[in-house]
Image 1 (tube, rainbow, N blue to C red):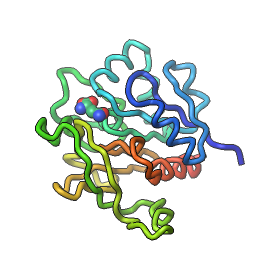
Image 2 (image 1 turned 135 degrees about the horizontal axis):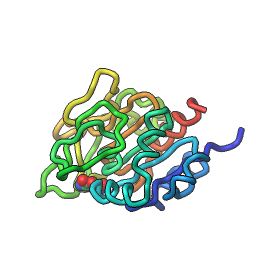
Image 3 (image 1 turned 45 degrees about the vertical axis):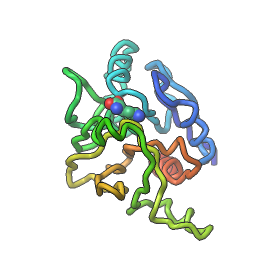
Image 4 (image 1 turned 180 degrees about the horizontal axis):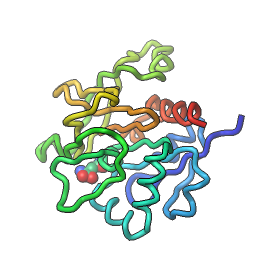
Length: 209
Ligand code: GLN
């Protein structure tokens, strides 16, 4: 079976790290930044960076409406950090007029962990992660994941169709969720060698096509 084609939105943010992680997880990955590049995709990754910049550049590149429509009509998407913010139906502490692509029935609070901890590493407690058994094969703890947070959001409130996949161990806050073919993490799995989150997304894309 041919590899699924997954685009990484390349308006801003850590694009090369996601491209590498997706290739590691068995997909064909390519950067996308124009509406006409979107029709070829089986899935889309929205990288971390700065959500207000992603919003403004999406408007400038005529990507906001096409991405909203594609995501609403079922294109699998995975957002990390600022990407999680872009997939939220509702924002807390958004900038004035800040728009998202939406898709996940949740309220995401921007910069939620506070300025004194702009950036930190922490363990995540994983649940409902279909790809988790792969990690357990080498004897590691399949229910824990080391994660990097950079001015990270958290999920403040989520609808009943949103599955919680991970909580940050120190605060207990929700930092990984899935709603159908949409996946979001407040942390950056592309910056650590553990590929379970990207493997899960590639599995979601395969199940969808
Ligand atoms: N705080 C950023 C925002 O609001 C997200 C930070 C990140 O993606 N690392 O978009």
